Image (tube, rainbow, N blue to C red; front, top):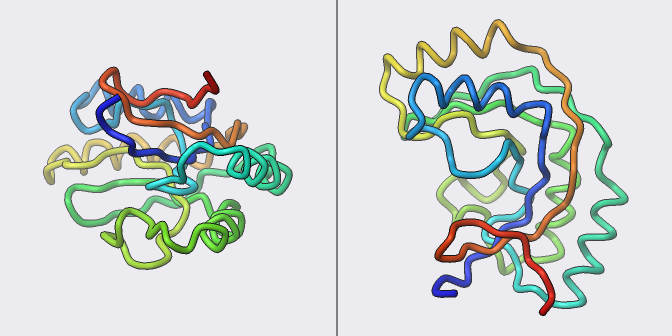
Amino acid sequence: MTDATTAVVALLPDAEPLLDQVRAIAPELVRPLPAHVSLLYPGPEFTTEVVADLRAVAAELPQEVELRELMLGEEGFLGIAVPELDTPIRQLRRRYPHLVPYDGRFGADPPAHLTLALGADEAQLTQVHQFITRELPRRSRLAGPHLLRRTEQGWQPFTAH
């Protein structure tokens, strides 16, 4: 492993068709991960204490979330707000105050969201926005949290060796 970057994510399996549609429009806009909400990025290193913390977080997460409101941001960003996860994310951030979300690029307390597109141009944003608007609201099951690490092969779940 050459990069020790980690992330804590919750998967949204029922949102995957939304990402599939964005991939059909422009695959380079979609991150190489399943549909997810980043609960903490960068994340903590893998330790038994972190595992215990994530178990506690799991007990606080809803089993299902509603995807309703689109978010438009800088750098060709289009996402969907997931406000049901804002409180659990803030609790997790308080456990790891030295980990600044997204290294501070989006402020100290960015809202929970599913990223649909990043780096889109105006035409791509319009096309994705039009499709996604027709697909909302949508409910998705939530799976996690999962601690991932970036490896030479991409993002992988942490496993104890």
